[in-house]
Structure formats: structure tokens, C-alpha cells
Figure 1 (tube, rainbow, N blue to C red):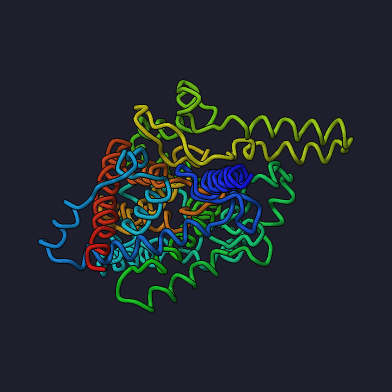
Figure 2: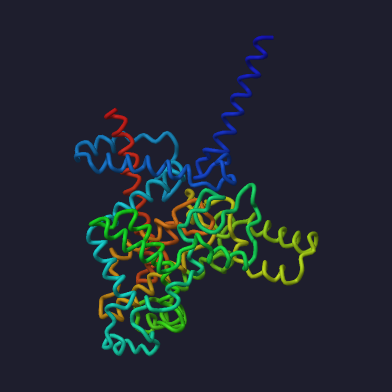
Length: 442
């Protein structure tokens, strides 16, 4: 009897352990079912992992070459490295290590100085009429200083970027979850949320960035985060019809015309988006577009229309948010080579990142400056990654962000992939090497 009870207890304990490992510590997830929020939506795991990764990074970077060699030689991963260019044993290690590495690489005085110069160009402090003539620009704002624009105080679709979402425990507008699988609440709800009290206007974001830049001599992580918010929200001011013109019809068209951005490369970004031919040509496990998201979206629409009998206006409002159909449950996919897994936002390569880099480049050119260098593009990637590297459903991955920013600055998707691969190698070395050094030194 006692033996049977012991076996039963052992079975229950093993089952509980397996459940906990699967639900709360799954190696391809950065979230947990029991997160105290909506289930698989909180940033808590990722934030704890990033804090630990910072310790490993500091230990490794602060060590002598001889000590680093010891840490490198002591690396003995107990699990196969199937994540992040096959450099990491788990998605949590990958996300935390690369987040820290990218932020620290941009944490320099040179990056801060470069960003300040770019900001001066963006707000209109350095505009030169001879530069406008050189590029044949006829679309121009009435006031060079865009801080005088009425859109500077108007919140927009990016005003919730990096803003804490108390319901999900992450950031941004929404997160699909176990308890909230239907995320489409209609265009009116989205508009109210992005113009609400928690949302940031371009003025608020820019003033927050200026304050962050004054607090440090380098572009520290806090300044990178503020910069990401400012660059995203201010794009709607810069690319307004009454200012420098539409992002694609005017700004990108100007850059295409002068060979400063490749239309071929930009088309690759477009083709990688969900439901585009390039994405659909991939296997189901490799696609950006999830499987469950669209099914749930259609089921919710049928429920609203046929069961709840919502009126035509309400249904039309819901149909205006069709993009949310692609919001995934699982933020990972099989990489293109089939050798491992990578982070996945569900949105594909970032056309937003492309537009951000493009308007920054445009502003520099209108000010008589050179286009963004590759190092400066990496800084922009770091700033956007600081805002998007969370568990929310409205974000882009590091690779997706790099794709957009590199192409928008006149480089290629291949350049972005090389950058991503190098980041993964360097971040993994510092992460696992630092981890071993801390064990050796303990």
C-alpha cells in the first residue's frame, strides 16, 4: 500500500513538473501560462532573463582575454542550440542575450552624437535650400521647424509603441492570449486607444528623448528606448501631406529616383509580409503568418455577425482591423534552412523600420548631410529594438527590424542578415562565456 502511494505521489510530482516546464518554461517561448496576467502575454520572464544576461555580458566583457578564453572553453551546452542562428539553447537565451548585446553595442558617445545630429535634421533645424534643389524636391513644409506643425501634438497609430499594457503585462496595443484569443475590437477601439491618456504624442516622445539624452554622455538603453518611441511617432509628422509628403509616394520615391534606396530590396520587404506571395511560398512552419490567428479571427467574425447579430456598422468597424487576423499565438517559427527556430512577430520584415530609416535619410539629405552609415543604421535598429523587444503582439523581431532599417537606409537584406548573424554569434559568446565565468568565479 505504501509503495503504491509512493508511486502515485511520484507520478503526480513528475506530471506537475512536466506541466510546469511545458506551460511556464517552454524552451521556444519567452512567456508563461501562469503569468498573473492574460496567460503567455507578460514580459516578466523576458525581463528577468535580460537582467541575468546583462550580468553575464558585464562579467565577460569585464574579464581579461585569458579569463574569457577559460569561459569560452568551459562552454558545454547541455541542450542543442536550436535558436537564433543555432547559437542559443532556448528562445529566452536568444532574446535576452541579443537584446543586451545590441543595446550595449549602441551605448556609445558616437552613437549619441550621431542621433542628435539626425534629430536636428528631422525637426528642420538644418534644412538647406541648395540640398532641396540638388534632389529636385518640390514637396516641402511651410515651416521648416516641424515642431510648429499641428501634427506634433496629435497622437497617432504609433503612440502606444513601448507603452506599458497593464492587462497583458507587456507593451503596445494588444496581445493574443489563452484567455483573450480574439483581439479584434474594431477600428474605433484602436483609434480611441492610440489617442488615449496613456498614448504618447510626438511632442511628448521627443521631449522624453531630449531629457534622456541630457542625462548621459552615451546613448544608454534608456535613451535608446526613448529614441525608438520618438522616431516612430514623429514619422507621422515628418511624412504628413502638408510637410515632406507621404512616406512611400513622396519620400521613398525621391530616394528611389536618386538611387539611395533599392526598389528591388524594398520589394523583398513587402514580399515577406504575411499573405504576400513570398511568405505564402514558404512551408507552414516557416511562414510569418500564423495558422491559428486567422482561424480565430474568422470564427470571431462569424460569432459577432451570426450569433450576436451585431449591426452592419459594428461589423464594418471590425472589418477595418483585418490586419489583426495575423497576430500569432506562438512567437516562433522554423528558420528558412530548417535547422532551427527563430523569433517571429507574425508581421514579417518591418516596412515600418524601412520607412523610419527612409525618412531619417531624407532629412539628412535635405540638410546637406551624408546618408546614414552602416554603423548609424545599427544604432537605429537598436533604438527600435528597445521598443519592440517584448512579448506583445504588435512588434517586430530583431531580424525583421534590421531588414527594414538596412533597406530603408540604402543597404540590402543580405547586409541585414549578416548583421543579425554576427549579433547572434557575439551575443552567444558573451552570454554563455559570461555564464561559465560566473560559475568558475563563484
